Image (cartoon, helix red, strand yellow):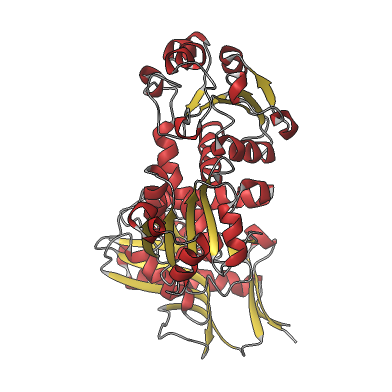
Length: 309
Length: 177
């Protein structure tokens, strides 16, 4: 029987993963995707594992996706949203986590508004930590499901051209995607307004352009990111209307390319801002496939980490 | 190392297993074969081919992966990577013959039964194994069709070689010291 090792105890970021780790997740996800099309969508692999979903920041897709993945693996799950918890009374992150762990929890899926929060927690508590998004740092499972979705459409990532468009500066999806795509051998271009592209992004080995059309003409895959209004305290562009005019992607633009292009978006979409409704709902779009694949990819991550216990 | 089956005996065992099957399942009506991934597939392929050759009957045949139903994912040093499950028919009301190469502790079969019932409610499940390592069971599981019974101790290993994969058909008993 083929055996391969996942090198990580936690999933904190794509930065820490080897190419082999990533490929292992994608390959394992194939089996879970297959499972999702069967009458019984559940397996008993994690029946002895308890997982807490610790969300310090709002989420729809990621939280539901993780919860579904956990349940399909037969894990026991606890959901924790800070808004309705003692965090609002001033409890610290470590205290919260240790209190939860004293109830014998094996894994923590964590989203936090502070970059590095899961890394910090992983050094202080005895449980496997899965980063479900930390501030503007990383969102590893999103990058894995994006890679899985591209692989599903195009067969492989090697040599493929991927453009990441929009708010690169505030996006943890962008950073995780860049690490993941580069490790899998894809070429990456980031495009957006100069104010939303970090100055030293080129050091990660990506191309930079401020022209969305140019990036679209170049790429096989366009991953359009959400304008993260909640993280912007400086006026980095003058208005949403202006942003949409110069940096928004429309169906007309995609059709005018006269080529096959895969359109992705990590959600939630600001319809009419970074992506027009007709583009989001066009045949180019694999946005709902991404969501479907998210469950399979998260099942793979949970399964591989649980096996390391 | 002890040779348990050479090529000639190996072929004979496969033929006999196919014969035993048809004695219990005339014309293979309502009957399906399920090979257990990964190495039960080799035996299942041979049985399917043998039945086709001997009786001109094509029996529905699927592959079952049990990785996610194992009871030992935490005790593995290496992660167990899944194989493909491919069962494109309903097993509701069917006579299912599960096929694996070596029956040892019975844990694989226990997992396989769990995995199998997710695909429906078979009328009956039978088990075929090329090799039965007797007196080693950790679960009350016995095979209905056995190629060869082997008496072995815990430290020994039974290795089945398949032409498709290992360039020869052979079964050996290996002493691990």
